[in-house]
Amino acid sequence: MTACRKGDVSLNKTAVCPGSFDPITVGHLDIISRAARLFDQVVVLVSVNAAKHTSFSLEERVELARKVTAHLDNVRVESFDGLLVDYLRRLGDCAIVKGLRAVSDFEYEFQMALANKKLYDGAETIFLTTGAENMYLSSSLVKQIAHFGGDISGFVPDCILQEIKERLVLSQNGDSTGADK
Ligand code: PNS
Image (tube, rainbow, N blue to C red; front, side):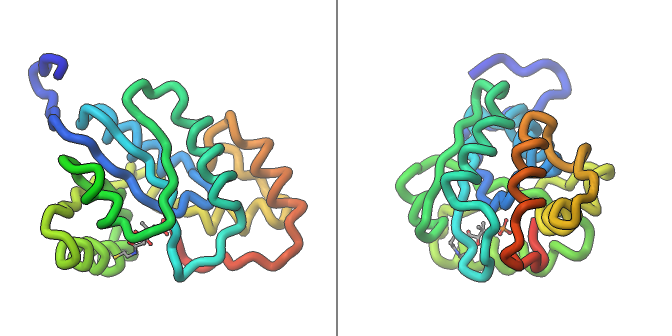
């Protein structure tokens, strides 16, 4: 482990950042980047939320996440289509890291954190407060705006902006844009 500078916090564990990432936004990237400064290793785990119909396939979401995190040496992107706790059990020494936007996220995230802990006692969830500039941001908002040809620059990382625009503006299949991250 690298030596801590004064004021740094460093956790000698792996952080798992699970989510639908449909698609990944600058808000997600902010949380992942901050986790990468706190933890030795970070796994961005593109997962299946059974309550959501996604606009991007699992493979597409992984590819987008890989592109936007390519500059972060201690971050890797994986996908998993089972229960999060099963992935955690297999990985071992790790913590779940999630971003928390104001009140709207609290109940949902609290429920998931408690359910994961109940299913597997080793599942500890750490919440990072979303950056103030990203409080309003969600994947569903990005999809809504892009679908109608609006400007999503600043909402998703530049390196995937064009890809997402082209993919979503052409999407005429009435994708669900239910509340998400
Ligand atoms: O970005 P999202 O959709 O809010 O993320 C939710 C996600 C994908 C992390 C959650 O649905 C999940 O963990 N899915 C994997 C299956 C699972 O373990 N479900 C039970 C969670 S208590």
